[in-house]
Amino acid sequence: MVRRAAGAGSGTGGDAAGVRGARRPEVRLPVLEPWTEGELEPDGDYDGVEFRELDLGGQEGVGARFMDCALTGCALDGTALGRARVLDSVLTGLRGVGTQWAESTFRDVELVDARLGGVQLHGAVLERVVVRGGKIDYLNLREARLKDVVFESCVLVEPDFAGARLERVEFVDCAVKGADFGGATLKDVDLRGAAPLEITRGLDRLSGAVISTGQLLDLAPVLAGALGIRVL
Image 1 (cartoon, rainbow, N blue to C red):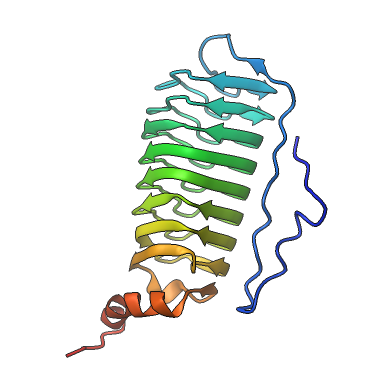
Image 2 (cartoon, rainbow, N blue to C red):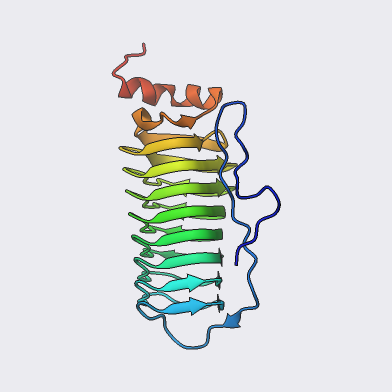
């Protein structure tokens, strides 16, 4: 279950830049039962279960529901988890390539120290989610909806936010390399904590975001090119 300390869940109230802060989850798991029943199942219902150091690669868990669960040190190479629901859970040390989470729902979730590549989260819904530590390559969040999401102390290589809707999303002490914001809609998105901040597409969609003066200078050549400005 998720419990919040006094004042949590209402955002930070914004700052001098007028940006409303993301509401973070504080997940406190109950006593968990270790998973010993073999492979995941489509539409499976997992409540209060711990998956620890398991190879779940290639398994089919489409439409599954994970409630008050912990996934720790598991391999997810090619695991099919589309349309899954992950609620009030902690995912730690996940690794894998090509994990399918398309159209899934993540609510009150902590994703910690992940090492993932080519994760498919297009069309997903993320609400009160913290992504802390680790590295995610080629994260596909096209057409996804992110609300109260924090990317903290992590590395994102070529994340794809094209067509996504981001509201109260923070990037804190993380690296964002080659991001695509084409067609995205941003509201109260704080990019000031991203270093470096590299945006290859969608600079014209950054209305609703805040960046620092230094980031503006770094982005100036790409911005000039997008606007057709010649700098000699």
